[in-house]
Amino acid sequence: MPPIAWQDLYASNRAAIAGRARPSRRSEAERRCVVHAPANLHPATPVPLVVVLHGCTQDAASIAAGTRMDEVADRAGFVVAYPEQTRSANAQGCWNWFASEHQARAGGEPAQLAQVLRAITADTARWTIDPRRVFVAGMSAGGAMAAVLAATHPDLVAGLAVHSGLAFGAASSPARAFSAMAGGAGDPARLGERVVQAMGRHARPVPTLVIHGSADRLVSPVNGDQVSAQWLAANGLLSGGGHDPERPTARVTGRVRNGHAYERSRWHDGEGLLVGESLRVEGLGHAWSGGRAGQSHSDPRGPSASETIWAFFAQLAQRTGGPTARPRVLSSGSSR
Image (tube, rainbow, N blue to C red; front, top):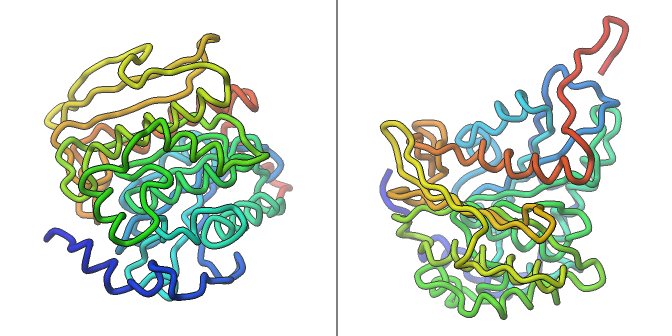
């Protein structure tokens, strides 16, 4: 696949991302969202919800195909949702994470995505979502918007995963977005303070997983380091504890057979609870690690980002809602 000219993509929609266009006020019914539930999931069984946000030039179908998250959901027994950005809001399908009007709770895309989450949770005819176990993940621009959603709606988001993305507040203009993508966003400690400020009265720690490739030429790997440091700082401020990004409580290295080497770091609090995780994949470019071959922004040479994300969320799910529910076969007299 030829490299994407990101500056051209954003420039084509400069009026919207520079704030000259009014934010969309579409309801959740007008914003497309593809939802997948295991076929044998009982509607009354409380289960987690994992929300996955796509990157630029992608849509709900392509991120679902590339990540294979549906397959993980079928095995583990959770519902997965893929909200889709409208081309009227961004000509290239990018989430507008870099525009100030889309970085607050009260309006813009975070509020629209929160509506989507609430609508899915309210649909009790098809499933029962445990509101304590709602998690959000994203790739690239979707990863950056996932961080925005967690910062502005921590009351809805119990855990965050950012793949090849950027820190919350890394940019508030197109020019700063390009600068941050190339070289990072500045002091992670101050970025952590921005998270706490954005959370307001809903503030609470949000454990965060960061996945980034060492060979990413579109969103520099320094951004992955800063996302991790930002959320460790924010969670430390909110919990009264400190977490040094340079001193994880556990670190392991490995290599996928015929694939990429990787380094996994984890941070735990004083009670042994997981508060942060980082997966650095050596040689991975701007692509979903371990994704389906032939899909956009997908590298099948692993390790599997989807499995890693769910393993992280599953630990958080056990903390808040007990063991995750396995799919239960419907009786012959039940209906969906």
